[in-house]
Image (cartoon, rainbow, N blue to C red; front, side, top):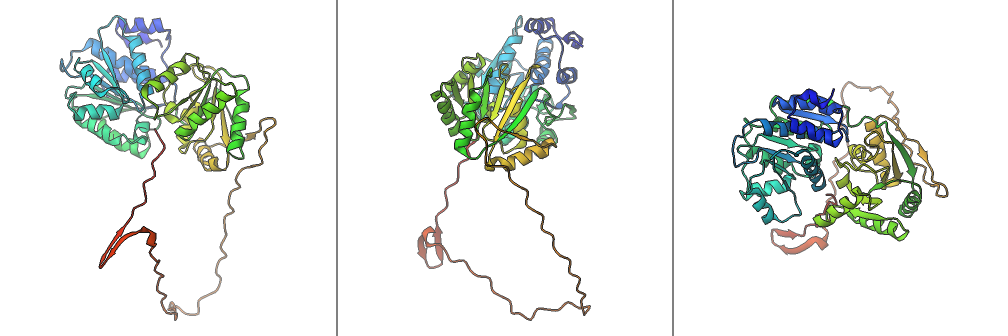
Length: 444
């Protein structure tokens, strides 16, 4: 099958040919014909499967061939979990618009809110953005979605993980549910949270599942190294960076570690940069742009770079820390081995990573063997499973058919004494207590 079989507008097929796309991927082959009928879609596919084109082409076809519901409101809204992914979708759209008069606006956090309000007044056909910033503009009435024709939730599971559930529901409520088409893409579509969201936003949706997200990537060699402690991990990382590679993407658990490790590698002559959610948007854009253009050879990032980003020259992915959620491991290693090339995924596993490793093995239904880096063997040999305690059966027969009541007196539970360090004021019948400060989560 070729893209000509879809009956797309000639301007779109011309752009596709110019970009060098010859045959649609499996998710594109299944999703595009359904989307072109206007039916809602609930879809899942492996990372790097080409789903961006699977929703962009039907949207553009609709906007080119059908009359708009309204001349003022946007016709399509595409939501992505991170600014980087939204920007990539926006770039893909710009590559396809040759010969058309379609307009799109990128609305993400980290940019001037007032400048974005002015952009929205120019009435773009398509808005590509992040849910939090879009919800803010709705709240300020900078935009109306009453006549929205298509809503796309890309990486919906990630958006929920990042706490955007309220924003998504606000956007869903603002758009007329009866008139619009909705396409929801997620790494998994059987998760309870995704099921609940799909019930709210979709109507009689077509379910499409092409290659489960947990299926093993055949083009990626996965290697595990045991690590004793932080200093040992850092020594292993330096050694890995001395071996031949094209580009390397390193994932860490915290934002602080991205900058610390980037500086550590720079000190030993490795061209490395950091990427995390607390960086100003200009620095985030610069870090991604330099890495995509191979100006930077190593990028140290949080999971902000784990989803959807298509970076062609990443030959190695290193998990300096294993992710807490096993699905994120799949998305991380999926940044390499793209477009038919061979990739290498390396994980450094210490005691604190062991529980994460067990969850990953359970998800993948396989177990990993461990290798060692020359000159850096680990004393840590893994955590042995705890033996299951077996209780001996009680073979004594009861001498009576009635249960005996205990003759012991009931023991009153001990009352824990109040820690006086928590007390501010003590009055008759009144106690004021200090509250422990809430620990801030270190995520994007």
